[in-house]
Length: 109
Image (cartoon, rainbow, N blue to C red; front, top):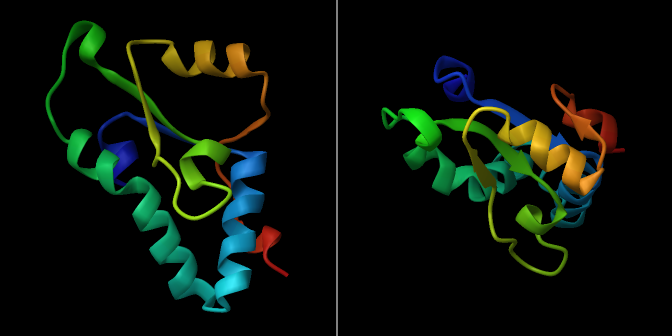
């Protein structure tokens, strides 16, 4: 919701979604645990996004990839992409399939 209100795209890579699901399963905490994992990953961005920005300082997107989630322990957090078209550049550079809107319960079995 906060992302949409500020015209910021939120993207999860396929590998990040699988890793988030695995972490939630290993903690055996259900939806609350899943929420806690996402809040940990997104904490830094929640303070950056509401700021008014112009020009190249505009936040185009927030990306959650495997590095943001962390394979062992805690990751580095979500990546903030600045400037118009930054998400497209990131995706073409990394060639990783992105998932724009998804249901995380699909990955938790």
